[in-house]
Length: 69
Image (cartoon, rainbow, N blue to C red; front, top):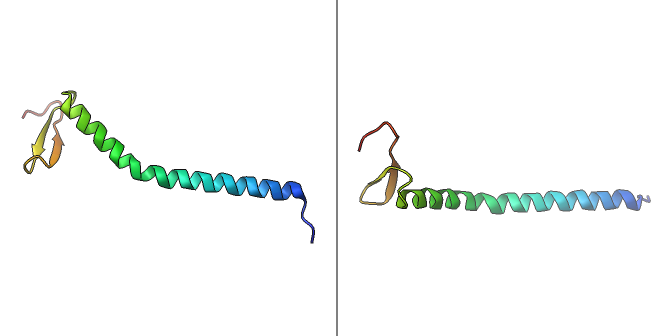
């Protein structure tokens, strides 16, 4: 059985694109939590967000705008 080279090229292209997408998706998911956490910590340290520390400084609780300390 002979398959057209154009079809084989499209199959390789589609497979490569899918594999590249999945690698990027899996690799990027792990860093999302780290990026969000670092951003929140930075905003708290620079005074852009009202916050307080819970349990001796391990966790940060963000204070709502209408809530008092």
